[in-house]
Length: 166
Image (cartoon, rainbow, N blue to C red):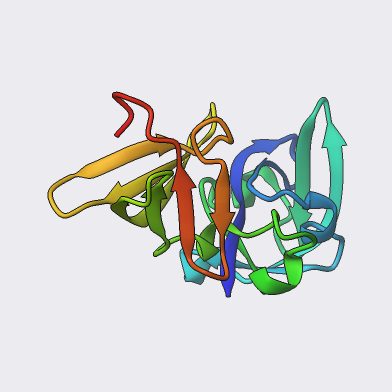
C-alpha cells in the first residue's frame, strides 16, 4: 500500500536540496539514501534520494536528477509516498497504522455504536477521528483520554462517552 511519508517544502540553498515535512514515525528508514519514493501527483516522480541530512531540526533531501533550486521549486508541495505493509510495521498490539482504523466501528463503554471511522485528520495538536453516524459527523480527539481502546483485529474502537463529546 502506498502511504504518504512526507511533503516537499521549499528549496534550501542552490544545490537542489529541499526541506521535507516529515509524515512518518520512521524517517530514518523511509528517507534512506537510494530509497525510491512515489509521488502525488504521479508525474513528478518517482524520486530517488541522493542525499539526506538534518539541518537545524529540518530534514533536507536531495534527489537524483534534481540538481538546482529551480528544479526543487517545481516539486514544492509534492507528496512523497512509500510502499508500506501496515501489518508488518506493527510491533505490539498497540501499534497500528492509521489506515487500519478507517472503517472501524466506534462504541462507547456501554456498548452503544456511534458509527464508523471514515477519516483520521492529522492536526497539529493530535490526530482526530472523523466518525460518520446515521445523521451526522462526530469529531473525537484521538488521545487515550477519549479513546482508551483500539482493537484492529475486531475492527472496534472504544471511546469514553464524555458528556458533550458525543
